[in-house]
Image 1: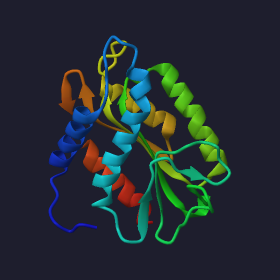
Image 2: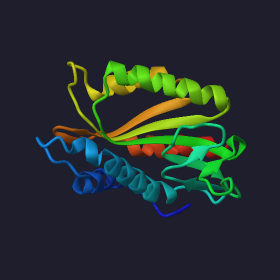
Image 3: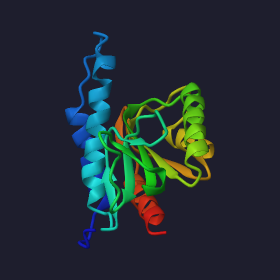
Image 4: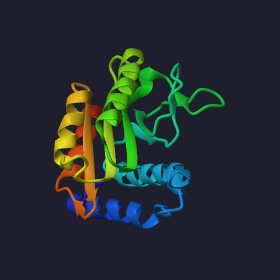
Length: 196
């Protein structure tokens, strides 16, 4: 873990700017869906690069495209124990080696249907990994969806994910405004989990 003083607001703005500048979108041509995997991979790699700076030596950050043995669900990032190794020929870790799961989205406009689907996904994860905690991190969230603000949707998502999950959003996409304190809260949430 880097002991130098960190300006989390600057880091948060840098993460948002990197993702925004490198993501691929071709408006009006129907190609956005084709670029979604690229954009999600980009967001995961950026988050991984920045989060690694804050982690203690006894955990490793793995991903993107990782699994937990016994689950068919592809996961974005996992914090695993220091000596964890994936099963032979896979990127699947034993659930007792996983400390924390992170679901990363590059760009999202969360609606009620998404919330319901997400709730079902996490219920399945909870059933298999009874002690696992997780975070849902969105880099850019579309604002004013159905008259709701981003902060209201984050609060609603936190109700779905509670008690073992928590949602964070780094910025609103239109207009692009960083949501103060979200990266700091996310990093400290992850550190609290791995230090127990």
